[in-house]
Image 1 (spheres, one colour):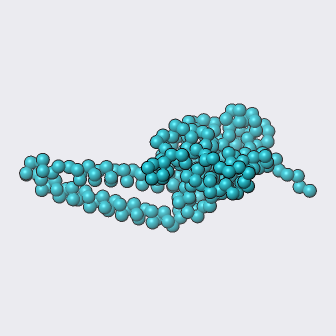
Image 2: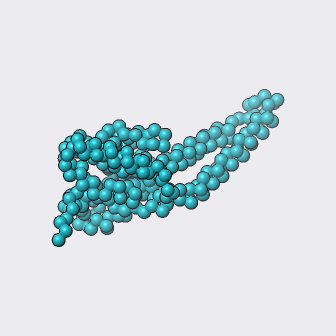
Length: 260
């Protein structure tokens, strides 16, 4: 995600250099609109990515994106149309979050959802391979309640890591070889060095084709494949959330309207 205020000379968004500040900077938006009218502003400010799991629209494929109310509508109806209370969310995180609303005592101990427009990501989360681990109660509650280690996200992190590593090594290696001064080598090994460089460049082209193949494989939408370990993970998450509710008695969901 990037700040809308950050740009390069072509007025295009540029990645934030560090994660030691909130990932999202909100734009100034017109007041008095219905919350649904803010969707395009949210898409821009949240860099077309989910507030909670960071999945982008392009990565989501068959998963839709919606407007989430950080404070549930039933709990804080006065904030329904407030832009500061609106988050851009993938449908999977939005459904899991639902009307969850931790009570005041739990919030005092930082059991609440992470929000990228105010919280610093590195303070609450750390990566462990393809899994996300918590560093604070904010991270712990967000991971448990939103299932931020679900199969979809583990696959996505693996794909991101493979693409990033491959691209970086290919670019750095090939550029280094192309800048190498073969004429400075002893005559006896110039020919061998030239052949070796041509072979590496050829391999780099094959790797680039491999990335394309990987992207094509991703187009088959593995993100919506059956999650075989979802039931066991659900039981574990449910047990941990029950323990938390026992420590902090109270209503953990927004009150429902009386049915007449």
